[in-house]
Image (cartoon, rainbow over all chains, first blue to last red; front, top):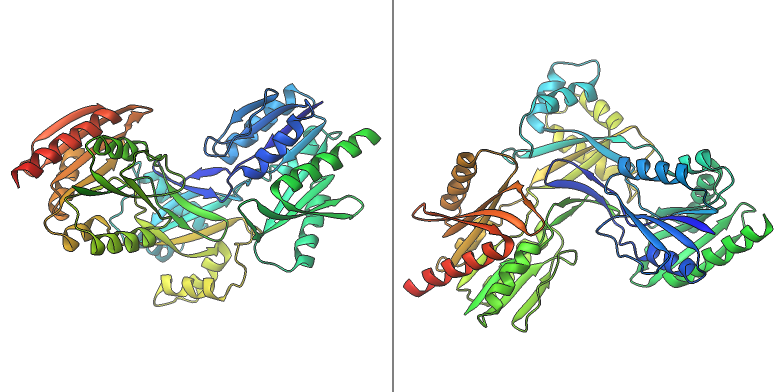
Length: 241
Length: 241
């Protein structure tokens, strides 16, 4: 059995010294990887240097930083190997910096009434020669453009793999969390979505809801419990295939 | 002897799951702290959970995340204790998120011709109820406002302390690096500035220039060399006081 796990959080460069990062320690991905490693499963782990790392003789790390690098590495691995399971727990930046300008630049551009504001701002950025944005201004404006949805690629690349996705929301009612998770499951052809709410995560305490295609929900209360629940449910589904 | 060292990089929250972070591992701050710890100096270290930590029985950590927390902790420590030396090696975010809106929001606000664009955008942000910015849009716009300059506070709080500041630029000519460093020294009443260029830093290799008030420059080529150079020069100056 060979599985692919993504873990940690991507970071998107603003300039050579600043980046937009995602809140993710990699602890849950570590717990999941170690849970499968106990069963002698071969694991490819796409992760970051900042994430907490699992240990195990069958775990092979592949390091990335940005969403673009994640996409590239995921495509490469999924072309080289056939995976029984893909567990995509990495917190992926929905957006990446397209341009950064000063508030004065923004006001100048607005005054020129461009037909395409984002494009006009990107041109200002392209004209700048410094590699680190000057701090000689009161306000900076960063324009971010949407990243491709990585989870959507997985079943396109390998329709037969068992896909476990993740959905993290912040302080929402349970019915909203489960509804959003179910939509993500359908949209991305996932077999499971682990839904969780940041307000219910602290240290090892981690409240998670694992939803399957039949809309059945199973709960877990710690990172270790979530990892074991995912492993057990995935193994059961794998046996019936 | 009691000294205060700041190390690592601040991070500024965009929302509950995203942040703007500074490129800084804390390795140089660790080397500096350990270099002084060998001399039995009492060290207060303001740092982050993500930074690499020095070890030593005389080192006391104080953890912060944002620039606002850094300011608060620094003021508290500098009110409670008198420091012989302050070494401010932390990479501090020049800017912090003020508001985040969609590109559609920005275009709507522009069309309404507000007298104060940043204020109008902050109002849109204040009206939003979600704690995590929706990813249902093609482009996001983040407005950042300038943070207070932390280094400028140090001599205001304790005029007698020996202050070592840092200046990091990216791929500039040496004369520009040294000119900018010297301006920072004068503006912030620093006794030394360690000037360095990101293009000359990789792993333990770290090219640094230590400038003093007499405009004398001493070079070092690794993090350990920089740490020893700072310690030696600071100790020499301390003896003449």
